[in-house]
Length: 354
Ligand SMILES: [Zn+2]
Image 1 (tube, protein in one colour):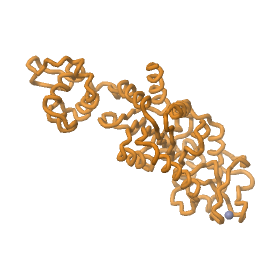
Image 2 (tube, protein in one colour):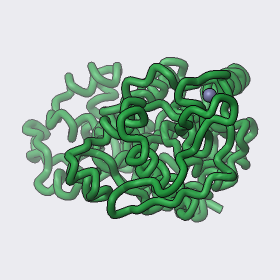
Image 3 (cartoon, protein in one colour):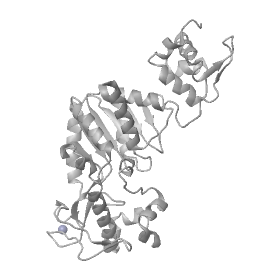
Image 4 (cartoon, rainbow, N blue to C red):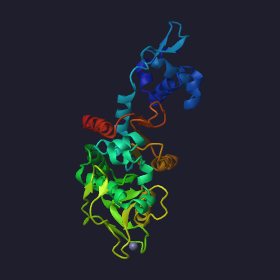
């Protein structure tokens, strides 16, 4: 059965998935395609024939199939096709959820806290004291070494204020505005950069809170207040807050950022819970929004768990993750790229279509 012309077979809606499967499993067998794609023998044969000269070689008798030499060269042979497909999904989506983790901020020039090495490079003073991210980002640190804890968070607050979100934020914002039911953001980042890039506050859920809000360390009255009047003076070399530490206006106790830290029993999650309620209401009205997950690692799985739940509800997924993408995953689109590069790549495709 080789009468099928390759062009017809490659135009098959299942072609891309079939091709990914063969590469991922390194198995050009018909049974592999039949099982994974739930298709008949005939259909699988057509698809495999179409892969001849693309990623598969075969002898003249059509008997011995193998993956062509060079088919595995490069990081992701399907990258360009996947970007085209991603652009198509963005173009045709009625609504979209942007699910963002730490990788989203890296391209704006924000430090990467993954691993002690990276963290201590960004904060040498903490490295000298062997203070890990998990140790300083904790209520205990505010209790035991408040000037250092505030040195760390004061520095971050200044950094987030001074940093301009990269162009990927603007692209997402523009795409969301063109969609019928718009866009919602689910982010574990506390830097407030989605709002800074123009996303309305009522469309952002910050699951770990925001560094632009404060709360009382003993959470005396459950208040949360903005940092607008806070101008951090920090000795960066020592990672020490200079001058009076921020205090609670009600009881005078030490104030702290309204973010969820490690082993944090005092986080005031009221504001975050309200945002979550808005997200849930929006999700009730948006039918299976497209999910664009960006820079969400497996180490802190909050964002990935949300993404998985959305997939179970029928959402399509575009995952952008430089380090943790499964590039041959046949069901979704996974791009092993940085946030900015991937989003600009999709944007370029959208422009070509016009
Ligand atoms: Zn208080």
